[in-house]
Image 1 (spheres, rainbow, N blue to C red):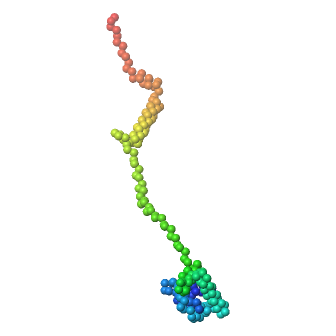
Image 2 (cartoon, helix red, strand yellow; image 1 turned 90 degrees about the vertical axis):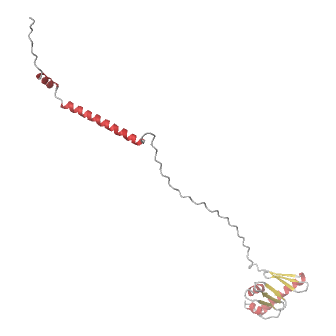
Image 3 (cartoon, rainbow, N blue to C red; image 1 turned 90 degrees about the horizontal axis):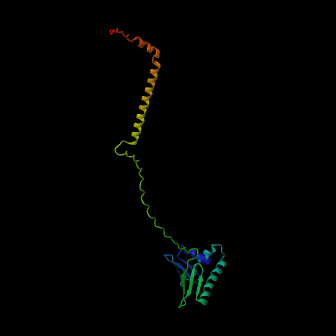
Length: 202
């Protein structure tokens, strides 16, 4: 609990004293350092812990336990790792050095930015121009085939019409001609009588 209070309090304040142990100081750049020179109890830590619903006896017991565990590890191994806060070390001069370690919840994961593929520019689209239909070229030395076909049809029509006219005329002549007997009679009537010349040889 003390570790959470230290981390939370120093986000908006510059100093927090652990009575009879030392003080944590927050620098302008956010770095937290530890100093053994400031040990006098200013009552801030107790008030903050009691505002969380702890009694005064519970607060005093938690502070004493924190100090005891750190000093015990430093005396036996020369190093004490407080998870979420940092590492305390005993120097050759007998002083306590502190190295800040960010809480696990505060450590920002490394963001790996995948390289984006370079988009190749699309080739310009050439507009499609509709092709003009090519008319067939007429054969050399003559008219187009279409005109020749029209001429043949026209000529055939004239021939058929002439044949029909001739047939109609022949039928007309047959129907309107007088009978053969009347023709013979008319020819006999028009004959000039022959004059007999007397024979003078006798």
